[in-house]
Length: 161
Length: 161
Image (tube, rainbow over all chains, first blue to last red; front, top):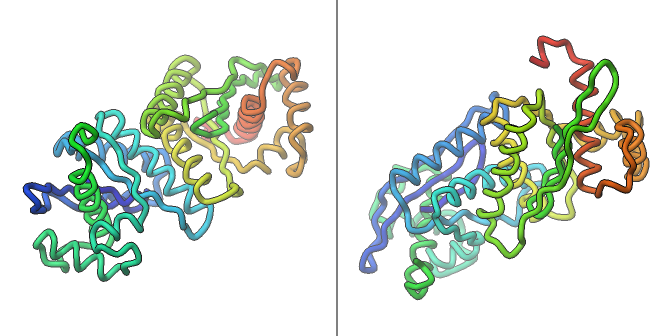
């Protein structure tokens, strides 16, 4: 399961990697209302992630680690969303990877400097789905999920647990 | 209740403002082990805050809003801690204030540009406690709690609820 963290819009994607072949299980974007208090929105996000974890029981979760934000205030807000997402994973005993955007691009496109369109093209191709069906946050989350699956498959099984 | 958010060290302070007089009820610092996974540490922090809320049932919580961090990565980490603290408050139906450091200093010292030592001196004086008993994170959290209490007392009761 891949997460593109955010409070206003949090993308999620669930994929299965089976015998080298990828399949999308679920994907979408959790949205909260900017007119609600931060705490209310974080609670909705936490509940939505817990519900997705209960439904799909993923082996691992990947939450993108973002170094470059427009400013400190944006980083703080994204951090709050990351915090409740990672809390939900810990509560569900789901191990969490924190790949950088470059690591995700490297895993999905074989190129850590790939642009957004290249990543979207590869996500559509690898999952065998039409690109016009999915939005930006969802595409990013699916890319993170694909990277997570590939990286986990490359690890010794004892480490993946 | 005032919170100086952080994952490695999260200060908390609980004060009562009664007929213009302040009293410290509880204060301390929640610490987590840097060698544990982020999710584990966030879970410990969330549980500790929930437990403090259940024990003290504060009317309000104030979580400092920090604009200036050394870098984006620090802001992200502090944001994660803020996220689970604000989630715990929302789960307990405790209204949350997000004062800036300047607002806290203004409320405690009457000067938004007061330095750390001035704030600590006023915290000790207002609560009638010796300063050497409390550490930095705890002092900051008590200052935030005092600011929250003063600001809430100045609001119309209907808004404070």
